[in-house]
Image: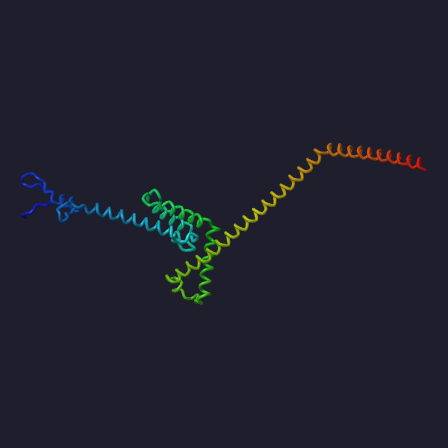
Length: 254
């Protein structure tokens, strides 16, 4: 046999490293100018860019998503388990976390939105309310479009899914509007209540001030009253004296 197996020494005592040399250079190539190209390095860079692009896309999706629909934010369907909700949240939070997306200023905003909607879905009362809204939306579509409940293929179609999300959006917007109106009404009631209390407070203070002024001027009023009586008595005495003098003159003339 003319050839020697890889790794065996030839007559000069040198090993045949053809195999190892081949493996060492397997990830390298050369471009047209003869420069060495590391395929693995390029693949790693492309993978990194792809991951960053995926993060940016998810951040943008969450920010532009309808904020009142927590299922849409986490890309979940009504009726999923709490375990599924937590798993999906963990996966997405790791993907868009601000510490891993320092070059994207919207990462923190998207993360806060995701966190808030995750809390909504882990709240049993809020989750059941959203589940009921989805069910009501489904019934409304069936009734408005007169769809047969046995048409299962339609209910799993993209068309129905899109209509369902839009109907859910309508209901949630209406609920939010009513909620804000109620808050506004309660605020107005609270403002009116505070104004009424303030008015009563001012009236009490005014009355109390009047009573104090009345009491403080009591001596002055007594003094003025006595002075009036005294002066009135003087006037009476003077008039009585004048009348007596007049009677004397009349008698003299008679």
